[in-house]
Length: 615
Ligand code: G6P
Image 1: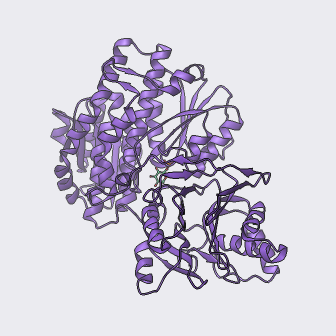
Image 2 (image 1 turned 30 degrees about the vertical axis):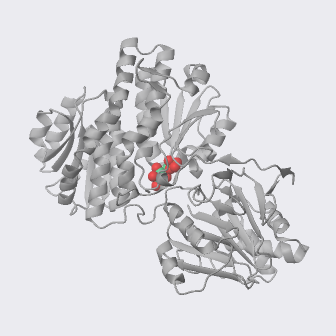
């Protein structure tokens, strides 16, 4: 939700800020803007509705200069997407400009107070309240910018990562965070801010990951100063190295990040399994289970919480842990879990799954479970993210940066981590035979090759996709391990093509969705050859009897479903519990190519953002 960038150094800031905004555009693209202090000491703000490209167009004939600046790409929360609600926001005197990612929860109280003091507001945003409050602190209490930001933030509740600059002091850039992501890059004579590392890596690999409730002063030619909002104490900055290269965040010859990330899955799964899967011995060594296996083994229940695609991975986790470890599992979307006063026991294990590690509802659900004594295990992709920091233990997915808004490689690596965790735990708990364990682990070693075989059928999926661009609705059916895959396939289609789609347990279709089926209706059936095959075959026949158009995902060599289906995509044979790693691939490709055929903006679908840092 919203991307922020900042620069203070010796170079012209504008091109650096714009490039940074492009890299963060996955976080929101309702409006964009920049603010710079120019060589004549003016604080200029340029902002406009729409994407970063619109901002570039808007700025192209302007003489923009300055070696300090801030920039923002927005996903609207308070106030519709518009020029006036775009960031940066000026203070009343136009001496200060501010960018913000997050929500100021008590903004109405603060706004009423500021209006009573004569402040006027130009936008409908919560952010403008903060910049006005900072100015009020400066004027009323005769404070410098750093102290004024500090005092203003002491009065604010909510979530934020902010960047602030001042007309009269082009040598200073202030930043702070609470519950929204922020990284500070420390280069040679220059400093950068970013919501993630992507705007920074081109300039430096040295970064600081500010903690929650820290206010940071970046000053030309000086050491960074960090103060905690809790006790005013000075904190020594700890410089870390980013493990990311430019290639990781570029399209690498693909038309879209989503397609690149679909094709990256063999590699990202390899990285995910690297050092954890011993291919020769057919063993899994997972630190989390080595160190905390006992805690898992004694768990009364495993609770899994997540949002969106990560929640779908969690649903597969239920099948994995219950089948392999015989531990009862409950899976719930984090936004429901956190607000329904759930029963949590101190001997529960809560697994939180999140690609970004910054999803507000998932973090809140984790905090709730932690307070009630549960053991918190995190599965996330972004190293050092808030999820990673909140956990007692966990496993990184190591998928590499995922930039396409529709999640693909994050999903398969999450399922892979869940499978490795369940297998390692099952071995430890002796709920799986040695033979089954080694056979399934051996199969995990083959997954990359098998995914490549599915990717080889891309042209075929593309051809099928073209046929279905007319559709206004889609139904996805699956059973067992592949029921969550059906849900994930439907979500992918909705997200990027704007076609309504539902994922359903195949047999449940009779209790409602069957009424929708006619000769126009496409039905994607995920039907690999496992123990429920005959059951799903009956479901397929029920669809056929009503003239539905069937696209079936089947195991290589399938005979029966092929007879009923209009189109068939084959996946190689594998263990049932690992099959979601294969069956989801054609569904990703299908949604990608349908969206392309419909002319959609696949990497930046309307209304969505990759990282939902507001509830
Ligand atoms: C957003 C994204 C989804 C993602 C979900 C959860 O809705 O568009 O792709 O699955 O958030 O995000 P997380 O980072 O917690 O996995």
